[in-house]
Amino acid sequence: MRLLKKKTKTGNLDKIVAEAKRLQESRENTYRDRALKLFPLVCGRCGREFSGKNMKELTVHHKDHNHDNNPPDGSNWELLCTACHDREHFQQLRDDPEVESPIDSERDPNYAYKPFANLNNLLKE
Image 1 (cartoon, rainbow, N blue to C red):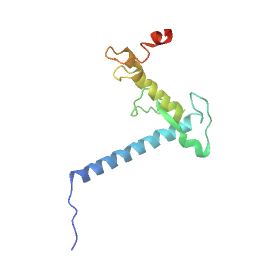
Image 2 (tube, one colour):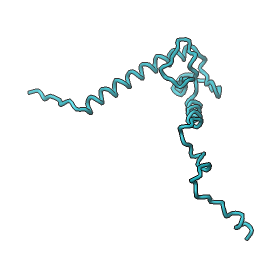
Image 3 (cartoon, rainbow, N blue to C red):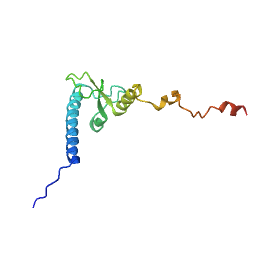
Image 4 (cartoon, rainbow, N blue to C red):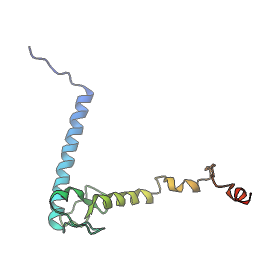
């Protein structure tokens, strides 16, 4: 007697997620391969050169941050090492007015704790 697997919402979701990952990897490999053929194997920011095993550390950055915008001439791409790529995306987040940065917390009028507020008086004693 053959056991039938019961289809669950989770099973269907797993299939959808797996297919989405497969499509994303396929798309990434396609534009990554094209970018690696178009551009020198050098980080566009720090100038680090890549070959052999360290090629996995060279990423394709989308200048307009749209991963679906992949023109055949590569005009929306630049090759960046993983460190520079992370810095680029951190910069984008930092400049986004919708994202609250902990750096800006001192400008928040509700920021009540000021550890050095009484420092001047303590130094006078």
